[in-house]
Every structure is written in C-alpha cells, then in structure tokens.
Image 1 (cartoon, rainbow, N blue to C red):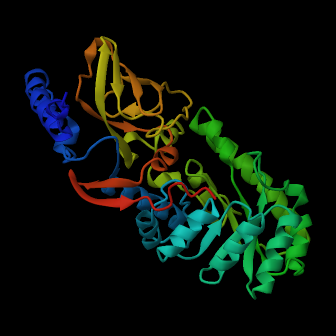
Image 2 (spheres, helix red, strand yellow; image 1 turned 45 degrees about the horizontal axis):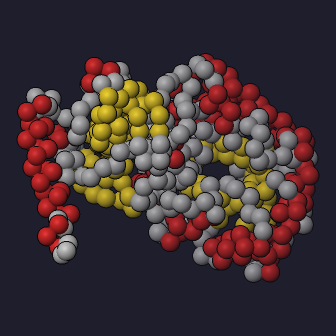
Length: 401
C-alpha cells in the first residue's frame, strides 16, 4: 500500500497547530499580556538566555566605581559570563585586565584581542604547559602556583622559550580548595624571588574567600570576609619580615567586593558574578532582582495536572545549584508565588496551584547560579530598552581545559 498520502510535512503540522493554538490562547489568556511581548522577545524561541544590556552596564560601572573610590585595581573574572563582548565592556570601564578560570578561557579571550590575563587554575602537565607557553608568546599572562613541583616544570619551559611570566602564590584563606597555608608562603616565595623557578617571577599573592557565600546574613558575610583577609595578612607579614616586596595582592568575591576594596592590604579585586548577578548574589544581600542582567526565557509546554506546569527549561538551561534560604531552582520574574520544584535535563516542574500558568505562557527566570546557566547556551539574546538589539556568542562556553 502506498504510504505517501499518509505523510504530512513538519511545516504543515506546525502551521496547523499554531493556528489552533493562537485561537485557543486568544480566548483564554489574551487579557493577561506577558512581559516578554512588550520586551520584543516574541520572536525569540525558547529556552533562551536573555541579557539586559542596561543592567549589565550599570553593574559594570558600579563595581568599577567601587574600585576607583578605594584606589584598587579591578581584574574581572570571565568564568561567569565567558563572553568577549562583556569583557571588552569591563576593560573599557577601567579594568586593568581579566581573570580566567581555565587556560582555554584565556585562549578564547586572547583570540578576541584581549590581553593581561591571569589564569587562576595552576598549570600542571605537559599539555597545559605547552599551551601556556604558546599563549605567553603573544599575550601578557600571569599565573598562580601552590607547589614547587608544578612551578619548576612551568618555569623551566618558559625559560627555554625565553619567556618570563609573573606568578602569584595562592594562599588558602579558609575555602579549602587550592593554595598553601599562610604560614608556608616562604616555601614558594624564596625560590621565585631567587630565580630558582626559571621563567616564573614572583608577582605577588592571591586568595579566594569563597566560603563567605555560606553566610546567612550580610553581617556574617562581612565578618567572614574579614577573617579571610586576616589569614592573608599572616602570609603578607611573613613576606615582609623576610624583606620580600609584594607587588600584587589579589582577592575579592562579588559578594565581598566592598569589604575587600576597603581592606588596607588588598590591591586588586578579582570578582566576576557582579556583572550578571543571580539568586546567589541576591541571597548574599549584594544584589536585587533589578540587578540581575541575565534571565532564561522559557515556555510552558505542558499542564498535565491542576497544580503542575512543565517548562522547556531544565537542568541544561538553568542550574541544579541551590541557594541558601530559597526554595527551588530559579525565580520566575514577577511570580514569586511560583516555585520551580524540580529539574530534569530538558524540563522544569513548576508548582502551579490555582493554574496560574497556562499552556503556551512564556516566563523569564532568574537562575540560582548564572555561571552554570550561561555555560549551557551557545549565545545570548541582548535586549535594551525593550528591544532585541544583538546576539552575542558565548565564545568560551565549555572551555573547561
């Protein structure tokens, strides 16, 4: 039996469904205009990452102003936004350079013409060393060390290539990740200062006080940051007694930036989340929903029960991270009464009591952690004054090497 008459093109299916849906929606929800329609996003398919350019620029200027007033340098972290266009705007606002979590991020930023890059993950292994040396031929780089073994290997390769790169000694100030204990700083400082690590030069010290995000109140956060910087001071005092000058002291999270900027021994802020913000920054008390430049646009694709709606943004669009003091996996803008209770790979479950969401509704979501969400998208939709004005490639997404 011939099968051709039974085939229907995808285009006709979509057209037939759309015509039927438009009629249905007009009769049920036309009286509830959605914010995204007014914002000019009606032509953007979902899920999509949406960037508000005015909010971004305000956030960038706010942090630049904090650094200027305190007389400290600002080196924004790119691991959160992974987008060269944003990095260029940060530099234009006065940043002295960029911090990149991984070597691959720095390679992307370098290809986009960006320079003065601090790579804050130690360079370990032949493959990484070879790539680092190649990048150092064309760009000003800084690196971090917390072991003599890794420092010697990288320093030797740089020396063979005739290159010299400043290295910051990472100090563990309580986060419990990388870094040497404050009291062990001379174990690395003496070899660097005395030229024993070949092409690595002593450039200063750095720290990451990430543990302050566990604070439950802004006051606890501030106290936690001060405790961390006092640990850093232990290392600085030891270096001072050894007559070792410290050119650079790099620290500061977005949540603790004002504390770091006002701390007498910190000379550089190295924060990143401030540019986009998210529910983590809101919970820390250092941002509001109006300061969140990134949202995820999503569509309600199913309402299988009276109290459950399903959106097309799941773990691959949002973040499985949780936020202290908050329920769910993101906040639907303007609908604080709704909770995204569960994430699958491609779907989000919304507790939908009273059928507040209907099939076809579109929502904007502030993620718990924007860094994770950004990394899931190839590009972001840029909006300004309620109009889509551009699309920016997230050029360093997936650059975890």
